[in-house]
Length: 279
Image 1 (spheres, one colour):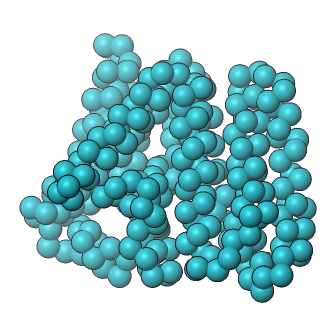
Image 2 (cartoon, one colour):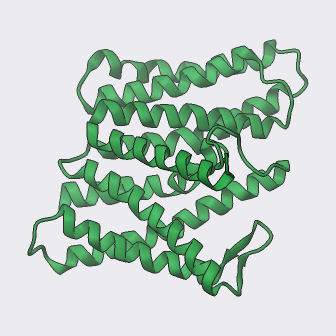
């Protein structure tokens, strides 16, 4: 199959999955964020391990910690005590991971444990915040979906602007194809997309202050998306790989798809909290 066609099909399925889970409700979005977190953490651990052995016990500890974190936060947000109790079990991850490292006969066990801790913070924490943001208020799910739309708009605007007008490199040592012209094009379209989302989500006649806040948020999403993309490029260049994996045909791994989201998610949590709770 033609590579462009394969890329288009897999990209469409990926977008459709995200839109569907955002619209179907909290359980679906919970499952999506948990799945993304588990896959992204596994890919990051594989990258940081640099081909060295990743013991099953260590992998199990890491996966369980992510599952406990998401389950506990879900229970806390939606007042389900049995699920919220998982948060009390989460601290046990630290001694368990220490024990696995000590018991392992691999010389790299300590380094892999440190890398796993970073992988969890880098992949799990932002997506956990993003899921928590989904349950903050009535309009939160729509804002979460809008965040994805703004990220995709930024990527499209950056690609088209860079391809048409690109002359000056943005950060050649990490991403030779990114240009300043592409960055500004993505920034402009992100602001426009954010204002359109504001008009759709909020009732007609809303204070223009709200549009200004959304425009600032759109600009922040564009900037953070670029930072997130460049940061993942930094990691991949450090370990000498082109893609984080091959899960999505034509697109690489899940990390290659959500690297922008990992940088945007914490800011989105703050934005949704401000919009839903104070405005």
